[in-house]
Amino acid sequence: MPQPLAAGTEPGVDLRDVERETAMIRLFDGHHAQLVRLAVLLGAEQDAEDVVAEAFCVLHSRWYRLRAPEAAPAYLRSVVCNLVRIRIRRLQVSRRHADVELFHIASAESTALLHEDQRQVVDALKNLPTRQREALVLRYWMDLKEREIAEAMGISTGAVKSHIFRGMHALSRAMESHR
Amino acid sequence: MSVDDPEARLRDTLDSLASTVVPSPDAYARARTEWQRRDRRRRLVMLALAVLIVAVADVVGLWALHSLAEPDRTPRHERIDVIVQP
Image (cartoon, rainbow over all chains, first blue to last red; front, side, top):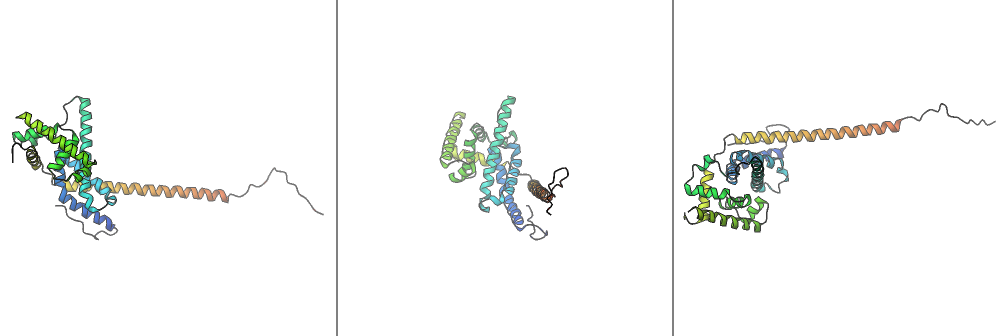
């Protein structure tokens, strides 16, 4: 666990910065592992740690622009979703140019530990459009409300409902076809 | 868990997949080093910018003072009419 800074030990340190560092430690301690898992489920694969570290750096630089410190976890989720989406898009473009098979949601190493039926679900999930996959992961793994999902994805709640409905429909059909 | 329920299957799969992910123990140290480095860089850029603005303002001010304090040219070859009154 990260050790908190001792306030007032360093002369000339801004108190606001000390508060920010303390809040960052608490956030890291409480949310880092979950965010890395979220990044993996969204398709960040081996870059999940880097994506989450980048999200924390972004949060650190924009800390004073947050409407409240309580908004930080939602902001981190949103940044992770955006960064993973950018990464997937970049990979898709580069692989299309290189004429290589498209993106896989989870590495062979992690899916090897899953059962056969779970692997089918992962296969079906990786074939979904990025937005639908995001909505399903945020809804069924993080148990977020539609409003929170909309905030994380930067879309309306109506669009979230649509993505979840279409995603589940496509997933159910894919599962049926595997039987 | 019902095998026929796609939502339950999805939850179960996502939980299983997530449980295979173990974050590295030095993640905090690396991330903190990175955000501190960026913070130092940002402060340095701001300081350099402030110094640059002050320096430019100084140069402009000194130039303005110099141009105002410049003495009038002494007449050499110009004709001067001298009126001597008796």
